[in-house]
Length: 126
Image (cartoon, rainbow, N blue to C red; front, side, top):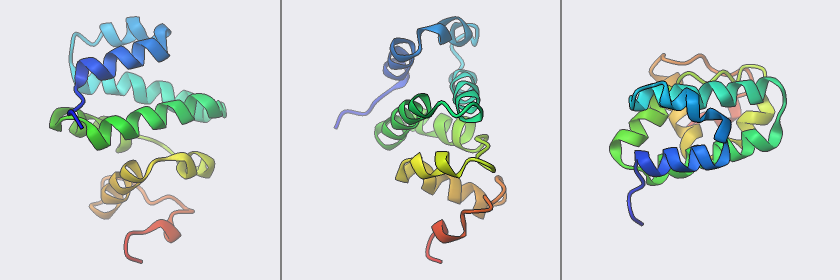
């Protein structure tokens, strides 16, 4: 599969969520800041139980993380997954794709993210 890249991600983000265009454009082409806009949008959807938005965001993030170029994978890991707050949203964790779950578990293992209270059964190799 062809490696997905930033411009593809941003086009899909704007197509799916056109109201994010101004916020994304305000980041002056800085991928990690653009990813924070996406994460903030998703966090709001999680907080308000907007299941379909969450599902679409996770599907998008999973696809670009699994098949994206190195810069996109890094931005999704560091500026999306690492800062996602799922402490009281097991339903959202359950919707998270396998690559993003693995990334989250890595951040927990290295001490950059707090373990989720319901995550014990998902621990890698445990």
